[in-house]
Length: 82
Image (cartoon, rainbow, N blue to C red; front, side):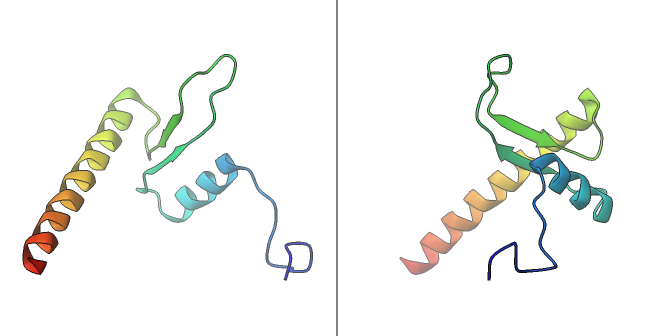
């Protein structure tokens, strides 16, 4: 079934998706990669519950904590299989 055939699907922008997610889950941190544009060469977008510098620093800290936990889990799983 295509998007045109489904009454439940609509075309939305990435910021629209993030806005909807954060309206349903206000503490959600969303990270995604985008193409650089002429005036913005960054490729990483972090949308946290607070658009302030402190809020973004907290979001980055949470992302780093998740990364560390995933690496630890992978290590433990690797050792369990050895």
